[in-house]
Length: 172
Image 1: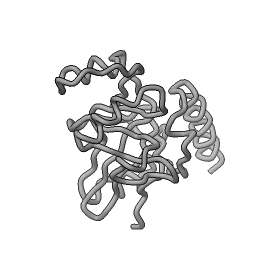
Image 2 (image 1 turned 30 degrees about the horizontal axis):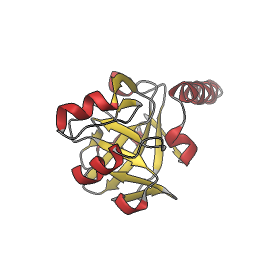
Image 3 (image 1 turned 90 degrees about the vertical axis):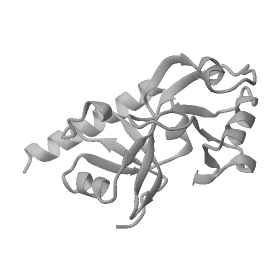
Image 4 (image 1 turned 45 degrees about the horizontal axis):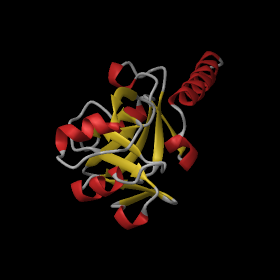
């Protein structure tokens, strides 16, 4: 299967896993060895600064909310616009970072459009492909607007896709 890195998985109404109910997941990595993604529309109640204080001794003056990237544990990860500390370019001008020194640098850049995540969404080799075959996910092209849009806007998109999917299923 062709890599879906940089594309967005939108959960279909057929996906019953509560970890992914009404989610949009940006695929950060997708190869024959598996896939890794970040849920774009699951903000937590935790300020980024509070989470940072638990993993680093350097102060954080950044405002904003931490996002729940998925049910798998992992380091704090960031989607951002800073090429100099980007580890993977996800979309034109949108980069991914998880290395602590890069995350620390990004923590100091207050006021920019960075999104911080705790946890991630992971798939074993072949697992995502199987879920795609069963119709659990709808794949869409990602944009920077998708990455940084408000979680409420994603609900509207997800509901529209669910209606379209339901309509298509009932016409068969």
